[in-house]
Image 1 (cartoon, rainbow, N blue to C red):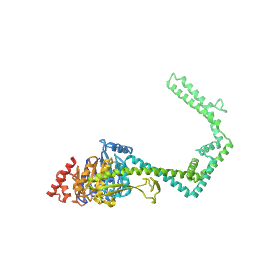
Image 2: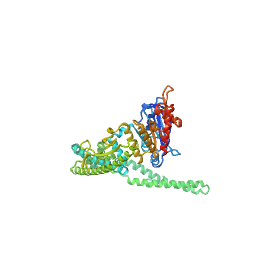
Image 3: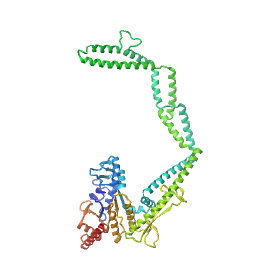
Image 4: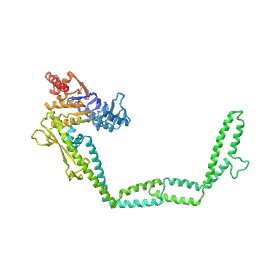
Length: 585
């Protein structure tokens, strides 16, 4: 859960800290006091888009910091991902997050004591927090979002089937597009193929080898300077080991080293230091002998063949002709030939290849159609369960006669997307299959079944959204849920039922609720109030925890706008008592 949230320099909030608890946290306050900034701060902390216009001019940057403590599978997943990125939790297991946004729009993120990309905060947010507000209700009205909600509810096996469908669809469209491109651009492909083949034929005739140009260059150097190299090597060989023209009065290095070693060894008994030097001279003699052998080998292998030199000149000229056309060096020419060969296979427009691609496209189309059919059946099964569970929740939200239906319909053919026969019907098919999903509401018996956007009022839509979230929470989901005034347009008994449902949800999740309804706020485990301070030159807001009498006064303000009214406070205390009994039951 999120244990603490600190916001600095954001909107009307100058600097405030929200101490949060497990269970249900409620945030209330006058209109314009800054309740929305709390949700905005949460969004920033978990990777949301930064709006520099909300940053206070002084100090010129907004900072949001949070302390997150996780357990179970959430802790394992999140901590492992953060460790991979170089961060780590505190010694007590808490995870520190922060996001900074400057007035110029620059943004920085820190996680687990390390600077991180903002996207990393988003990854963590997807795992641990779900935020629901008025915009989420509007999003739920879109057919694609309704299909995504049903897919999320359907479970892991359905998710695997959906992933398989997306993968098969991607492969199918790739083959279809490739086939169409080869047929559409056959002439241009033939022209490019001819040019590539000319180049490949020229390179194949020369047959360059990796590193050949450097090797030939070194060999030319030896052949062109063979006489000078031979003279230097012969003189060196004579100096270290004697030679063809050495005389008796010009001793070689090996002889001199031997004489020096023997002379020192003769005196080693008198002074051991001379013995040590004699041993080192013996090592030097061994090294000189090795050099002598290598010089002999070098002289024997030194070649001054003019025919070989001419052949190398011709070979280098052939290689230079290739490097002038295709690359800077021989290795680059070889790489060009490899790329050209791969490109030729891409440009192939032979009848054999086109027939093969046609068969592959047909096979993949059949696979997509089969997976889409299975996906449709799975959605229909999940739709019935989803509708029953959401309807049951609506009964507890003061909508006892309402019913939600989830219609899974074949997507009409003839749109921009391709069509396939799915379960015997020609339908439009996309990466998510061939279904359209529509949430419908029967507000009361005898009422027509209408899409949510037509059949639900604002208050009803809020309750449907909450019912869906309760259903999702029962099957897992993030441990922290945030509701930003999803109770708008609701009052009376319905408001009490929303508070009761949120309190029930808080038994298994941490719930943060921004609300203007006292019936909802009464169910809170912790009540925080956002209040404006207009005493200075600039209006600011802060957050404080209210308890006991202060809490009753806040509820009285929410009930009647009169925090000091004895009647309002009595009504608030009664509401708190009812909520306390409900939470204990």
